[in-house]
Length: 158
Image 1 (cartoon, one colour):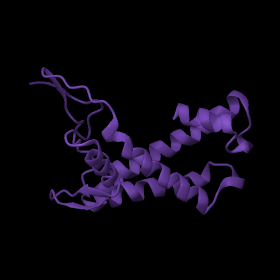
Image 2 (image 1 turned 135 degrees about the horizontal axis):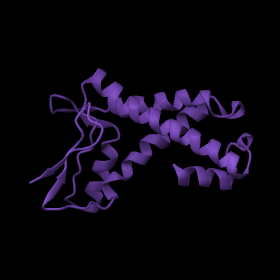
Image 3 (image 1 turned 120 degrees about the vertical axis):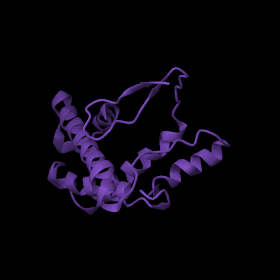
Image 4 (image 1 turned 180 degrees about the vertical axis):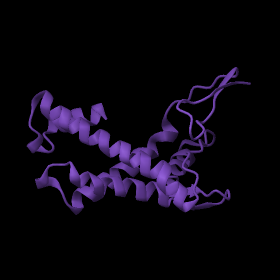
């Protein structure tokens, strides 16, 4: 988010925000609000409604091409609570709902359908890079996924 806001500041995206630290802060705040609302909606609210598992299941093996295609496909398909693959309504609706909400805090001159579409597609596209990130593994420790209701992930020893 900080880098995204910095790039927007450099390119003077949303000029109504101004320049300097104040303009950067507004851009950062908008990016942060968009991220938080997309995460809340796409990983908590919509998965509950559509009975989907919002986690990303790391493939880790196979050719680079197959891993890239897998990562891209998970932007639009997800495992349901029954273990079957189905359209990823949670992620798509989460990002587009957050993009629609962003019309409340982006500058009035930049609001509208184009802002919703660009923010929604950008949010979905950012998730496609997960498979290419380096992954650190440890034989002794494994960090479990947080259980709903717990503030921090639980550290389990194998």
